[in-house]
Length: 244
Image (cartoon, rainbow, N blue to C red; front, top):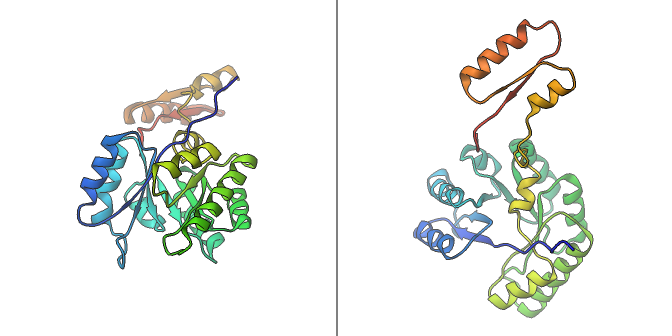
């Protein structure tokens, strides 16, 4: 019997003074699948404060996500963007996906809306998040509602689910048991053609189409010239370095 996938850690780091040290300490404490970088209270994310955090997360093999700013995520070559709940969530998702393409992670906080969660997942969101925002005064009620939403989602849907606003280890253990995940390897694998590493040139030749595999710029130029000289179809499998 195949084992159930274990839940993974999704860390939220507030940009600003001391953020780099806090993130470095968190990453050294244990494996973190994803890091969400949010602006400090009353400010906006900018390249200067976000770039070091993105680079540090990626060096630790964590997916680096920016809060709400797909343009900045693309500029910094972050792994994706996280969208907060709101009335314009559907439009925000379409805009973010248009900016990042299918190669970037677009995660969605559905708030308490099951409808928004389902429509976002249907549109192609890479994960759905439910939280217990700190502004809600009845903490027990907020946590119970988040637990209920996470359990409902995990029971029915395959799109990964993230539980936000987790304050204690006990909460994390409980949410892990009911099915919270993170956009770590499971989500990233859906955006990655490298596992398994397919030889598309060999596949093409097996179907009678001449092909070549290029791993350097010189090899690509040679393969392209050869392909242009062919009277029929010719496939060039251009292997790009990671995060290009």
